Length: 212
Picture 1 (cartoon, rainbow, N blue to C red):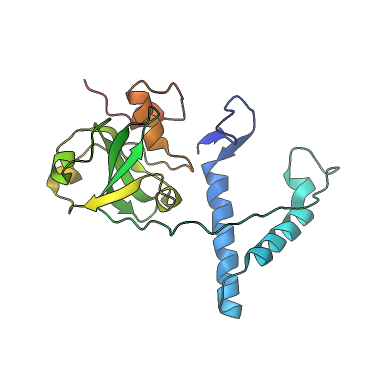
Picture 2: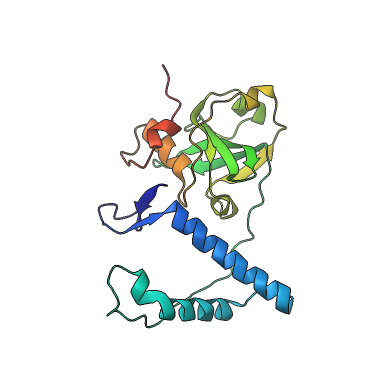
C-alpha cells in the first residue's frame, strides 16, 4: 500500500492518505448507493449521503481517530456544483495534458484492467503541437503503462483527442508498477523525466522509461 500527503500543496505536512483507505471508503459509498437502489429504486441524494456519513462519524469518531475518545464529531460540510459532463475514455484513445512548463504532452489509454481500471503510458512528446495520431503512436514512451484512477480521466486530467485500435506494437510497450493513487502520477513522472519537477512519490522512478 502507498501513502501520500493529504495536502499535495504542502507535502511536508505529516497528514497522510493511502490508496487502501481510499478504496475501502469508495467501496462503502458504492455499497450505500446499492442499498438505496435495491430498496428505494434510486441513488441517495447528496443530503442523504452526507447525513449517513455524519451519523457514522458521530458514532465511531473517537475510537477511530488519533486524537482519541475525548474528541467529538460536530458536523460534516458537503458542497456540490454541477460540472462539465464526465469524460468517457476508451482503449486506444490518445490523451493530452499540460506539463509543468505549460507545454502539451501526450499519452495513450492502452488497456482497461478489470481490477485496476484504465492503464495509460506517456509518449516522449513534450512541446509537440497536435499531430497525426499515427505519428504520436510511433514515439517511445517515457512513462510506462501504469494504472490511473478512472475519476482523473473522467475529470479531464488528460483529455481524449482521438482513437486508433491497439496493435501488436502497442501491446508490447513497457509496463510499470501495478499501483493506483488519486493523483496524476503519470504527469508527475513525466515532469520528473523532463526535469520540470523534483517531486518524489512512492515508486515514481519505476514509472519512468529512461533511455539506457
